[in-house]
Image 1 (cartoon, helix red, strand yellow):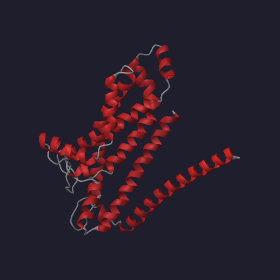
Image 2: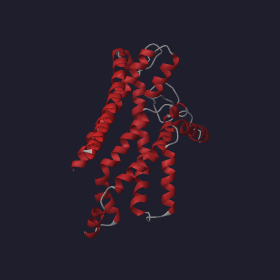
Image 3: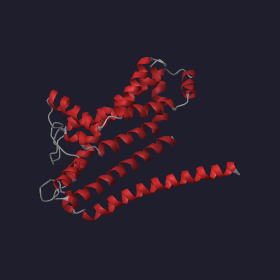
Image 4: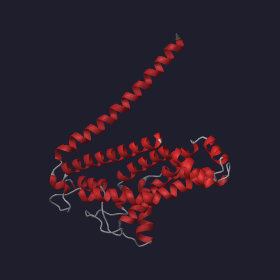
Length: 273
């Protein structure tokens, strides 16, 4: 009876924790949507930003461009480094231990530190100024530890029998990694990519110091621009367009949900294969 009571108590705590988490998430999402959707209007989706319409469309396009550029920089570096650490580096190597420790440390650094680093290095030292490329490089440095660690854990989760079977059939190490290990680890890698996209889309502090706050669609990589999160922060801090800021928050939330849903769909397709 004591054992059954303990199991029932633990099961009740588990269900209670899950219900609380789900309730908090539903409350936050519902609050943002209820407060923001009624203030959506056609002028907010104008192609040109003015002080009258405070259009969020240029910021939305900039957000997508920023995420694309950041992932193009961070994904090859992060996935390549993870492949080296798991598949090529000698196990027990002290350098690998230090790299993993450094990566975990970098993953916990506040975003404002990355913003100051990007301002000092990309904006000032390299002379790029407030630009799309400076913001994308800063975000790439910020999400690189996340992509590296998630890819590394996904590669470790692939059973060694896959590798041994490929080696037994005469495949080399590179072919085994590209044709056997990476496809099996792709759902885990995409999970890291989803988290990285969420951090990119919701980032504000790092981009204020690197990409700037220019409310326009960037015509090139050296142009200054603002993302949706920076746009929402600017409207809220000014205090003149709080309703439009709420509408921007709703659009930002819907955009993140759409990206995550698409990524999860792709991950399920790859997992079935």
